[in-house]
Amino acid sequence: MLISVALGQVLSLLICGIGLTSKYLSEDFHANTPVFQSFLNYILLFLVYTTTLAVRQGEENLLAILRRRWWKYMILGLIDLEANYLVVKAYQYTTLTSIQLLDCFVIPVVILLSWFFLLIRYKAVHFLGIVVCILGMGCMAGADVLVGRHQGAGENKLVGDLLVLGGATLYGISNVWEEYIIRTLSRVEFLGMIGLFGAFFSGIQLAIMEHKELLKVPWDWQIGLLYVGFSACMFGLYSFMPVVIKKTSATSVNLSLLTADLYSLFCGLFLFHYKFSGLYLLSFFTILIGLVLYSSTSTYIAQDPRVYKQFRNPSGPVVDLPATAQVEPSVTYTSLGQETEEEPHVRVA
Image 1 (spheres, rainbow, N blue to C red):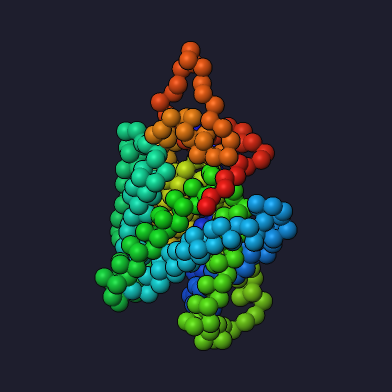
Image 2 (tube, rainbow, N blue to C red; image 1 turned 60 degrees about the vertical axis):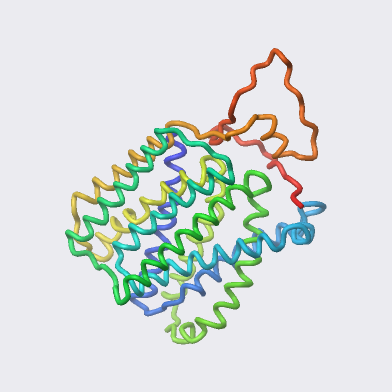
């Protein structure tokens, strides 16, 4: 349980780094280039993971994967790219508090999709933990209002709120799809294909929508260092998130990411001289308590374990259990134990 919570906080710290570098780029250097920043991340994923797939042999080769599943990864790449774009774009229209609260919409999206498509079943303690985490986020938003923290432009709040909801929905779809792929196929395949299609579509979007903004950037070593820092944090987030999702779940990861805004706030107390409120600490510990509650009990798959094994390895025979053996009604889904060295692969039509 503690490992699960700790791994989620590593992801939150990476998001904190992403937020801080983005803030410096946009406010101090007036470099408003969210698509270009995503493009840099997808290029790194392409260079590391797509090239790894290209040199593999047999069924795991890049061309073999593209022949079987290219259109699925194309859709996933678009979803991932636009989820990032919509949430960043929302800051131009609505308030920071609205974004913080509405971004939590990703949690019910992930729960519903996991329930219907991944067949995950939750217990009462999981829902209690989720409610506690969301209460912690509400406490943080209230603290922002009380201390008068910068709330954003708010020029067209309805448009901004709809952008956040759209981005949160796409994030939820992407996360659940990611969990399915890394559990039934492999982490390297997911990251390699995201790098391939993400770089392709973000390059097109960059050329159409952001090329003029890119020309306005006052390039120097400081801006270059910020772009490098952003790309490093983003690449680390994308590379490490599948590991955490495989050990926990997409729902657990999204609950853990609720603390990212608080880490950014604590850094902002020293870097940007934000005003402090005791409610921020209360919010932080409330979210951590919710995470501990959620992680204290494992979720499970609503099906016979023999069916689950056949789903993971369809080419192998289904082994009938002895009549005297006791068949468990469900399979524990989250696992904090030692992972096997070789990831199972599934041939998907």
